[in-house]
Amino acid sequence: MKLKEQITINNEALLSQYQEVRRITEEVCEPLQPEDFVVQPVVDVSPPKWHLAHTTWFFENFILKNHLTDYKPFDKDYHFLFNSYYETEGDRWVRSERGALTRPWVNEIMAYRKYVDDHMKHFLQEEKLNDDLVSVLTIGIHHEQQHQELLVYDIKHILGINPLFPTYKPFSDTQTKPSLKENYLKVEEGIYDIGYEGTDFHFDNEEGRHKVFLHEYQVLDRLITAGEFIEFIEAGGYEDHNYWLMEGFEWAKKEAIKAPFYWFKEDGVWKHYTLSGLENVNPNEPITHVNFYEADAFAKWKGKRLPTEFEWEVACQKHQPDIPEAANFLDKRHFRTMPRVGNDYQFYGDVWEWTNSAYQPYPFYQKVEGALGEYNGKFMVNQMVLRGGSYATMRNHIRPTYRNFFHPHLRWQFTGLRLAETL
Image (cartoon, rainbow, N blue to C red; front, side, top):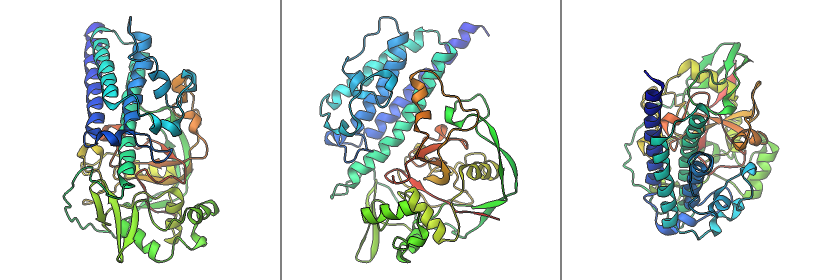
């Protein structure tokens, strides 16, 4: 096959991937009303309108402006308004005030998306892409998938603090009753390889591949459920300092935390907000909206601990290296945690799993030059690693080596846990 033919095929495949990812982002926003697009209840939440614009800014700024001849930016002010954290790209609007941007209007942002999409289509149909451009475009596609997940988090927060508990998407409960026995997956003592190895897309924080020594251990073969977490609550788990890290216990006292985010008790029944509206807590579904402190305290209450990220990765690679069809990802559009199906070990989807590992660079990690070098490396401090993906993650976006990271006090994201212990 001639090189030109290869380039054409690659361009067509990239265009198809690009268009599908862009379509899904807008699909996630379809149930929203205009007033929903600008709300920012806390600093960690970005208005949906901002996500729509920032993901578009990424392609305009890193591809079209520099590589499409005679390209004219849609609006010169958007570079300032919709840069997120790239110091290399200059000044930007302050993160905590994104909700103050009532202008530009939502319809102007949608026009911006169409403008950039039209030019990206022209670019991918007409231009030859070198390896560097393919890399940037691929990062942009996966970057937008990350924002799809953040969109679902943020939409739930925006709707979930509304006293009307509005429905984002109705859901029919299947009343699945899984087996919730405590069975464990063992891993023998040894030296194991950690990190990504291969040529497919991955983020730089998954490099470089290196060896770790692990003592013999085991992990629970499923996620912890809401029903099990209720037992922790009703046993006084939030009040007993013996299970908590000092910083976590101080957080819980200061914020008067007595249950996971979105939970409250009414007439003796635990209820919580879901994207289907207000519901009774299903004890068979995986627990979510707990932060690292809560997950760690629960594990200690059970006489266990959280796995390290290395233990999680090795157990996943050993016992469930391939994503099962039952895995609950954004692809299925459930928009909620789901009870366990069959013998699925739940390493993938439903909720991100807290690990007991600080987010640090691997040996041999190398920060890339330029703005994209700010993508992961500068966040490697004061955060904990999570693994496995959630029901807001696209299936093609996850893999066993994927390293997510959040500050230990945050819990608006879809986070849960499994137990581990050393043998």
